Amino acid sequence: MRLAAALIEAMRPRQVTKNLFVLAALLFADRFLHVNDLLRAASAFILFCAASSAIYMLNDILDADNDRMHPTKCRRPIASGRLSVAAASAASFLLGLVSVGGAFMLGNGFAACVVTYLALQAFYCLKLKHIVLIDVFTIAAGFVLRTVGGAVAINVPFSHWLILCSLLLALFLGFGKRRQEIAMLGTDAVQHRGTLEDYSIQFLDQLILVLVTSTLVCYAVYTIQSQTARLHPALWVTVPVVLFGLFRYLYLVYQKGWGGAPEEAIIKDRALQVVLLTWVLVVICAFRITGLAHH
Image 1 (cartoon, one colour):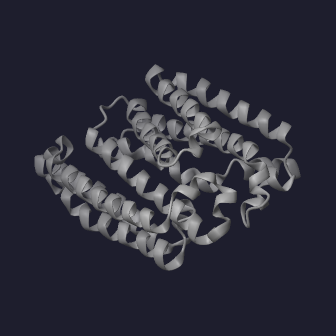
Image 2 (tube, rainbow, N blue to C red):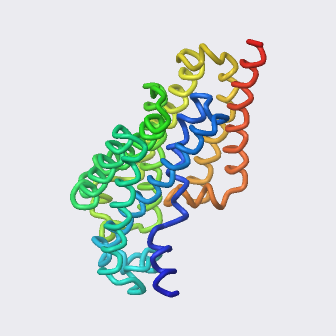
Image 3 (cartoon, rainbow, N blue to C red):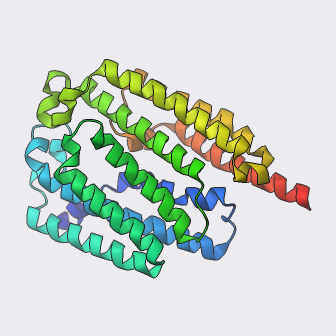
């Protein structure tokens, strides 16, 4: 039972929220009421959860020594010794194998997304996380692959606007995480993550400002000028909800210091949960309004 609990914890179930990007295409392609597409999207979500868990375990194996000196990461199963490297390696390999095997059942295109994700993130664990800026861009690429994979899984074309929004939002979250790591660890930050030596709070604040502005502008243009927006003119009403959501997250980063783990902010902050739910409901309503108008 202890081994099973340690394995589940090492899979980081709290971070499954990152894989919600897989469902973006289902929502914006207006296919959320199609049972077959819903099942395929759910399967894609589960397979990306398995793939990301495989990468988390690989990363924890490689970072075990540094994690033991971290104030919170030292409690992770591998770093604390509750889960052996051998068991974690076997579980990581098995999860990766299951994710790839299952991905081919959804089609070669989706399998290509999963395989690319695994290869890119494995390379991140081994090398890319040690290169300034490239580290966060690699993580963001993983979110883009989730978005593309979700579209390919249900056989709908993916909008370049949706890809750009996913990229910008992921970069915003990633650099926000780097900022909070420096703020929390202070002078010890470099000991836990080497690239933090090349970052500073001032530099990251500038990047965050650029990215939050770019994300909002890109999303606003998407809701007005994209092909989806032309089919659903009411989609622009979701912009204020997104604006509030971005501001709420900035509040959590700068006032509460929660940006070190974006998934924790979603789990812990009730207001952010309400914003996300409201955004989904408003998007659905925007699509339904168009459907009623056509009838």
